Image (tube, rainbow, N blue to C red; front, side, top):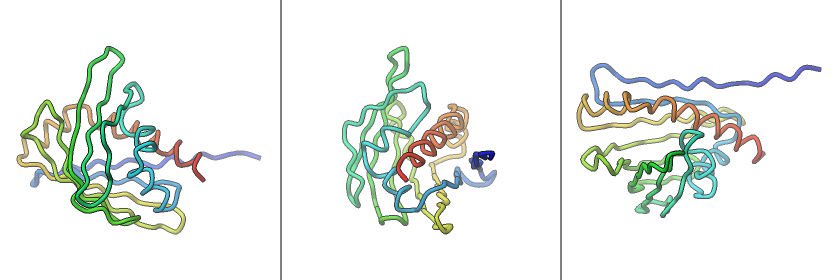
Length: 163
């Protein structure tokens, strides 16, 4: 008997004409489980970001009109701080939030994540809109691709243990 591991590809698309980044990723879990992993602080802490970083959540109130602030701490002690506001949280369906890296407070992005039921699997599509093409390109150049891919791999692992 052989076991096959299914690895879902992470698509990261930067439209050449718009200041947007679109992330598309499928997960081997129901929208209910994936949504929980996106909204429950103790679960978010386990998957969001690169493996080398330790996450500390100062607040994470994932409801419409709620807010969040968390810190990623690197192995050398460097802190990366992020904050935002949840504008809409619709269970198992959609999250609309702002996202700000505190070292660049003028660089606020608006993110919309949708959770599409694929019959026991879930496709999450996240669209981030920023002010300028330069801001979008700076986000991409920051190494976000590695952090996103590693975070989604960690989310796969978390979801496998939640079933």
